[in-house]
Length: 219
DNA sequence: TATTGATCATAT
DNA sequence: ATATGATCAATA
Image 1 (cartoon, rainbow, N blue to C red):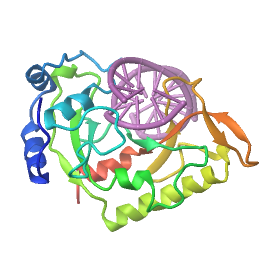
Image 2 (cartoon, protein in one colour):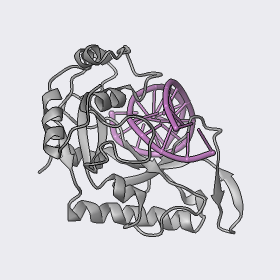
Image 3 (cartoon, rainbow, N blue to C red):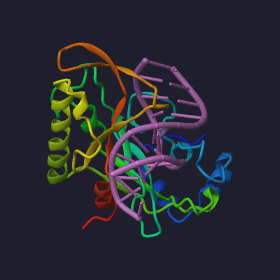
């Protein structure tokens, strides 16, 4: 088992050493079985990178590197290094437990420090042949945080008012709210605009690829 | 073809 | 049921 990195510098060093390597090579070293594609293995790349970098595994509600306060995110990219998919952040509770301020929000905490590891994600490319790109340790600058805050506050108000019908993935410039469940029939408890307890689709916060794109290619 | 809405796997 | 890790695939 790979030990957790003791310092941020060590984490960055390890991550940098992964750049240019293939998922197949890494899988072999770590005794992971690489699937040909990710259908039915959606979290596989993330789990492989966790193991490679010594992230604390499991489903604990804390950063991947708790002592460093750093979150690990793999991001599938095309041949030009542009993200192919949006990035999952965290659940958006509809039952009245969503934080009341951006400062207190789980979204802000999660995005305080993220180690982005781009990985080739074209479906035309067999998983073992996909290469890892150059990692980026990102902390939101003032402009980015202002944007995230604006989006979060918008979504939080809609949810807080219980106006569930207004929830729409088209809203939010950088941060959107989308369904997040194992199946379309999944339901969670929500509070509607009359204060009634109702069942609705589970939602989560996601970063748009147009936003993550700017993080991977600074400048 | 970019995006939204739906879905897949595992651990606690 | 909720958290972790995300990508799939129908549609606009």
